[in-house]
Image (cartoon, rainbow, N blue to C red; front, side, top):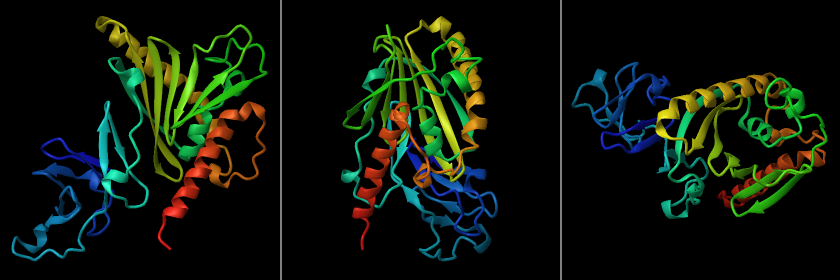
Length: 283
């Protein structure tokens, strides 16, 4: 759960009151604290409980009455939080490089998926499903289902190209690990998606369309962006939510083929990251 202090600082906090487990997201922000709707307990930005109305102002609040928080940083309109092992602020990984869209306008929408975030990510790294799942939308004009892909690794992820005869590299996907996807459609237009895990079977996908269209036409671009994402995701969701197992970490029985090159690259990054986390955990 996220909220902002009076000064605008973003706070990431477990969505569970330390008193009796109610969702803090149902509460309200008051005087630099989040107030639980159940009994009015208030928690500061550091997670400490600072007010317990049923016990009165003079009651000594136990130090263990607190909510877990996680460090946050902001960049280019995104709020990032660290969900890994506790580390010093200076040891946190660098924020994604968003220089490619600097100065561009963007619209945004949120689309909830009833799937594990790893399956949602893999879906946008898969060109070969387009003529089948999206046969009435973005795949309607694909006559040849044969799919050839090319991967170009970089420091923070990889570029993902579809090789077709007569096609240039003007359009490509740039995946920034662990959960940021860019689809370059030209110098003046980018699609972006951020996959936010909610729990083991729910993901919020925040979709942005970056562009350089003159301001009077922004409402039309926003309308197109929202409609197109609804159209595409509405095709995807029934198929992706049917996949078993839900988490790709458990998908040892999957038999990937060469056209699944984007998935292979993603799973390789994920395995490497998990190995690094295991080495970092205290024994």
